[in-house]
Image (cartoon, rainbow, N blue to C red; front, top):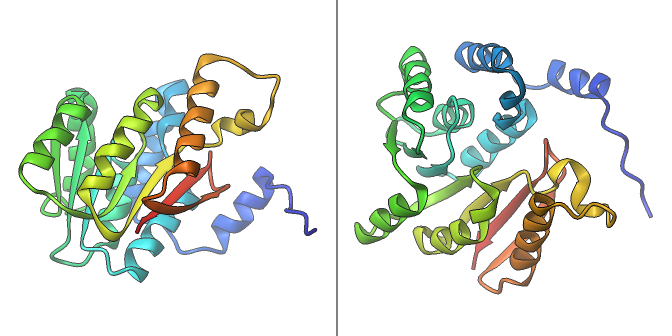
Length: 218
C-alpha cells in the first residue's frame, strides 16, 4: 500500500511557490482575513481555491452557487475562473460580512459576475427552487449542522453531471479519531455517512485544506 506524504507548512509553501499565482485581490482578501483572529479559519485554503478554479475550467462550468461566503475569497476565486458570461450566486446571512465581500468583488471587477443574497440559507434555497434555478457547480461552506439539509437542496438545484462540493469534511482530522465525540465532530461524521450512502451521486473526499467532498450528480 502506498503511503501519503505528510503535508507540512514547509511543503505547502513549496506547493504555493510552484503553482499558479493568485489574483491580487485574492491576496488582499487573505491579508485582510489574517486580521480577523480565529475566524480566519472560515476561509478556504489557497490550494482549495486553485482546485476550484481548475474544476470550473475543465468542466466548462458557467454557473455557480455558493452557500456560506464569509469575506468572499472562495466566491471571488470561482468567479475569476468563470467565462465572461458566467454567473455566481453567493448566499450568506451576515450583511456586514457580505458588504465586505462585495467591496472585494468590486475591486476585482467581478461584481458583474457575482450576485449576493443576504438571508437564511434554507429560505434562500427554497426561493431558488421555486424560481427553477439550476447550477453547474454548488460549493457549500456554511453551518455544518445543516450540511445534510443543504445537500438535499443542492441535489435538486444542480444539473445532471453537475458538481456539489463541501468544505471541512475532515474536521481537522477529528472525524477519524474514535476518541473524539464532541457534537460538531459527530455532526460531520453523520454527514459523511449520509453522503457515502447516497445513491444519487458518485463521490470522493480529497484531503485538501480541511477536506473537500466532491459529488457528481448521476
